Length: 58
Image (cartoon, rainbow, N blue to C red; front, top):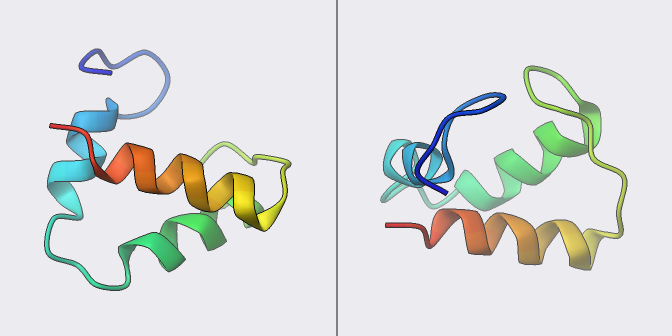
């Protein structure tokens, strides 16, 4: 969670988006499109859960 392997560490993503009300929707859209991020295949509910978990990182 704290280490950068491919792309930023989860805690860095959470810190960058702290206070951004649109962060969840923006990250889900980027994951679906694969633009600037790794393209992830999953249902909307799965992506939402993953993004919420990532944004909760400290």
